[in-house]
Length: 220
Length: 204
Image 1 (cartoon, rainbow over the protein chains, first blue to last red):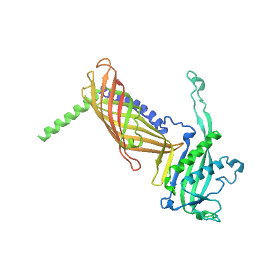
Image 2 (cartoon, chains in turn red, brown):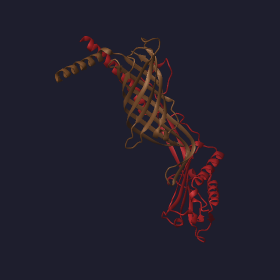
Image 3 (cartoon, each protein chain N blue to C red):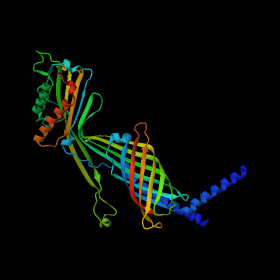
């Protein structure tokens, strides 16, 4: 009988060790999985999303009106100086070049010549802030000095992203406050941390990509 | 006749139970896991995973039967670079795409060892039954869609333990092949992969 109880106690110890060994990695994994190579360059952060209205016959369209400014989507309480867009001309010219290549003819005065569609470009800037604290590795051999307090280190990071939004609407939107049928929408988003020449290249490349990935809006 | 059969059955059951307690011994396996995705997992990530580990303990309940448990962790990862993907019929997205799948099986295991814990080669077959925790992330640029799911799952296994330094040695090498199958849930597709596990065994 004694041997029987000793065997049970040993089994209990083994099970307890087993549970502890299971629980520690289980909880680590459940809290945070593993994501290797999860760092990308500024250029790799660029994303282009497009969507078109498949009930529209784009080959029947010919002319478009586009304002000669890019509309900033801003917080009404913000300082307008924060929203100066040094790339406004680049955006307008790149969209115009692509619209020309797709067979559209620009109308300058919609009051005189009614266009088929209206193209509007707008920009939006978003700032994301992360803050918290972490427990760094303080090195071997000195852990005794840190008892009972292992000091955490606070961190604060922020980054800004910019989005260029291009919308193609039914012409009824011109001079009107009401939303009309949207024919095509494109959004190009990326982190705003490049040099001026890099930003110019990235803006041009993403706007070009928006047109390239929707050949359905061609009129020719 | 029926009474005799019942008595024989009862005595056999008692012998079986006592032999389980008198047997003792088992294995602790510490393994490096390589995983080759199949099925819907391969549709998501086609590259094999070299990032995985497994920890397993099993004890003899009879001369050749072992019961135990296993926890493992496999990380599947594939970098698609800058690609264009169709989101639906009229929507397209282009960006730097990376996909991740963290898979964690938590299993109860049962094994049959052919050589009764003696010899220089100890082959076995076994099964695992339990749950798989799956966490996936689909990145485009800095944005991602994450899904966390628990799946009921099962795996058959065939493997071998090689005691180092003779049949009474406490350490050995082990190698096994498994076919992991995580069943589909209401929100997630089924996942499956072939696992190749290599590692060190502590024999007790």
